Length: 220
Ligand SMILES: C[S@@+](CC[C@H](N)C(=O)[O-])C[C@H]1O[C@@H](n2cnc3c(N)ncnc32)[C@H](O)[C@@H]1O
Image (cartoon, rainbow, N blue to C red; front, side, top):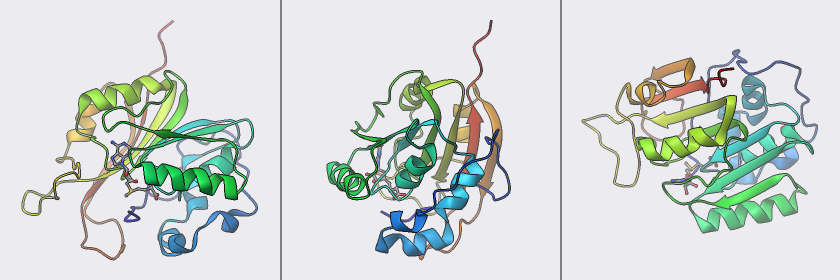
């Protein structure tokens, strides 16, 4: 569940156009079982790298227990919103309870369908898909995600790549090398990297892909 990867290479803030406001009580958002993951992938750093700023409307696919969701919500603030989806009703219940407990009011949880994120159309400034286990190889699923992003909005993506000699079990949707670049050829690719390892998360090293892409602006 918490076998997450580092989202993006540090020191690249592709989205930042104005300074972000750090959430002052970020530690209070962390659940005890997230401490190790947060040491490897500090949420505040991820928010900085992504340039998450007040007022943004974010969609998060596969939010799970909300390790990143709560930090996204804190950063976008009262004027922003996070649509956090998951196909697991237990994860959604947990996340709802967590938001209530932590006084977070700008997260809308969505019990999604495996092939439909159920995000609002043409709305999102950014979609985050961080090892969501969603059917990322399915163009129909991705088309609905793309439709939810406003023109000029972004998608941030991290996912495992399938090694032919070491296949993932059924249910884990892995990409073959190069697949994601092809699936997003209608977007502007800002970062596209396939890397061999994504840090010591306690399991075997697994190649994965990191991508940031922007939806084209509407033509005048
Ligand atoms: C590795 S966990 C990631 C959890 C979360 N991002 C975090 O930081 O804790 C993967 C999550 O993706 C969810 N998931 C699997 N398939 C999905 C789909 N088609 N749409 C949305 N979520 C999905 C799983 O239920 C699980 O909660």
